[in-house]
Amino acid sequence: MNLQQNSKTNVMVSSRSMSTLSTFENVLKEQQNIDLVTHHLVNGTVDPLKGVTAVPDLLIMELGSDWQQELAAVSSRPAHARPAIIAVSTEDNTRIMRTAMQAGVRDFFTHPLPVQELLESVNTLANEAYMNDANHNGQVTAIINAKGGSGASFITANVGDILSSAMQHKTALFDLDLQFGTLPLYLDLNPEYTLLDALDVTDELDGIALEGFMSKHHSGLHVLSSMSDNLGMPWEIPEANMAYILDIAKQQYQNIIVDLPRQIDPLTSCIIEHADIVFIVIQQSLTHLRDARRLMQILTNEIGMPTNQIKIIINRYNEKNAITLSDIKQTIKNDDMFTIQNDYKRVSESINSGQPLREIAKSAAITDSLNRIAYQITGNHNMESHGVLRKAVSYLFN
Ligand SMILES: Nc1ncnc2c1ncn2[C@@H]1O[C@H](COP(=O)(O)OP(=O)(O)OP(=O)(O)O)[C@@H](O)[C@H]1O
Ligand SMILES: [Mg+2]
Image (cartoon, rainbow, N blue to C red; front, side, top):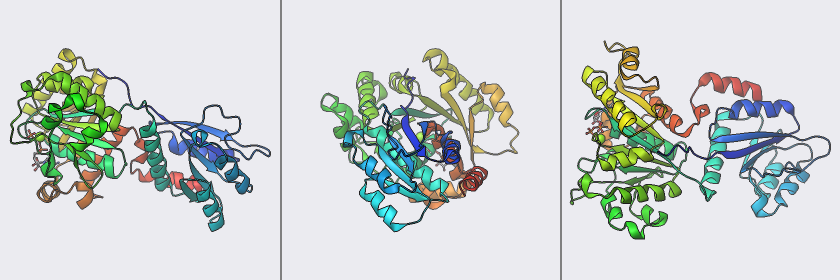
């Protein structure tokens, strides 16, 4: 069982103003993928990294009246000791911006800060730093339905799209439904190669070669599909080869999301053993509940998955249904629940056109529910569209 979560990105915020530092702390504290330190610049210090022994992956520096010397100080550092930099200025001044860009600053913001854009920029640079770290270890998420047709594949395709396009995480989807895989269909892809092709050449496989077997979606998402003329049987695939491909993928991607068929065999067990999170997708019916409870028992008792790594998704959720959320919590004995609206019209349009929901219904409630699952996977809870938080934070920055 892989209990190791994504390693964190070290972010330092430097400023002469204590209130700016505490505001940044408030904004970034929910970002579980970030370790934040603040550096209060005092007196005549112009180098925000002066005396800093552990150079951060990302520096957010607020420029003061000595902005020229401050930028010169960071740009004069040797490349290996220079973090990615976001500069923040009180003045909307083209000269400052140009000098900052020449000093290698990756992004530039002026007060009042656009909080959402700032968070997106921090996450993009944090993702880059994560991928540049030679020791990074991607996170594996398995999505499995408790009953056929619950919506696991649709959710996998859409969460993958959100991770790639909105969150800019380098993400791969693995379709483990060897006989009835639907991921390429939901994303309008025509796979040239499949998982079985990759498994055939495991001995020669490295990260770059593995990417060659993936179908590329325009969102940046990579999909290792399973459907081929050569019908694969799970028991024909050596688990060791599957484990090896997962290990390579963890070096190559930040997130690997696996669409698992509802059957526990050596192959699916191997994926679950490697998974950091397993989502079980159910709908509100007694048979779903019975099967979800059974699946939970198999995952925890037989495969040894810790309960806190298992989350439940109630798809096509209807609050008027006789089976309530608390009934489900009690029956399955799991409090970690996500709900996804029943939205036949938008889901059908998405599937029929092969366009993810984010492309055709970005602001719909169902898309927001899928965003929440992506946030759960990445730990970026602050990116949630909490209007209240955004308003509070922009007020603080104004
Ligand atoms: N939230 C939703 N609202 C409305 N319809 C949905 C929703 N989610 C899924 N569906 C419908 O359910 C069908 C089955 O979804 P999907 O293929 O994702 O299920 P699955 O759990 O992967 O099934 P399988 O057992 O075949 O692998 C889809 O074709 C879609 O029409
Ligand atoms: Mg499916």
